[in-house]
Image (tube, rainbow, N blue to C red; front, side, top):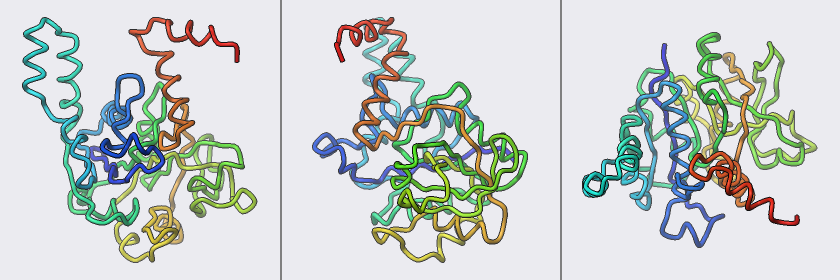
Length: 287
């Protein structure tokens, strides 16, 4: 079965980026000239996803406006002969069908996913966090869809990080199956480096089946009183196979200031309009 739906929770407060996020969603912070969230939506669209479910809160109206049509702006761009800009803006609302659901309480990513249960229905679906970007030739979620089509089981995307960073992420306990594919024996949320079962962390990419909802409904709140998707997946691994796909690509945790700056430089160096000018600028610094 093809993966046509994706769920992306975007209801967080973005406190690590205050004061920039006081009136602007963290997912709308721009990497050069494009919001973080748009990179993730484009990844999904390139992988064949046609419906994007965004789990928001009352302060995320800017996200809805960004992915909606803007008649006045589009009219002005055409009137002024700015067809390239018009096409760029028009393309945003045509990336997918967008569906918005409110998360009424900040109870974590697992709870956010539960909010989308009725819309997901009986189909397998993609799930991604709204501030995790993976730059790759083949869309990261597309790589995982290929593995899902082979194994017909839930797939967790993983990348390798230095051991000292495991305390920031969900970490898998792997059992090697084949090149780039492991069976997940367990997943531990934000373990100390000395207790981490591996240095393979999840960069906010999943292919899941509707079975995950029954586990999310049963688990108790974890760290911070939140419902963690990783806890539900850990329970799921006790009853059925869950696999991990090692993603080819560069991962940027754009919820972190340093990682956000790294991502900005990465995309600025590749931006077609800058024509190498940014690289030349960086070379003038004596680091």
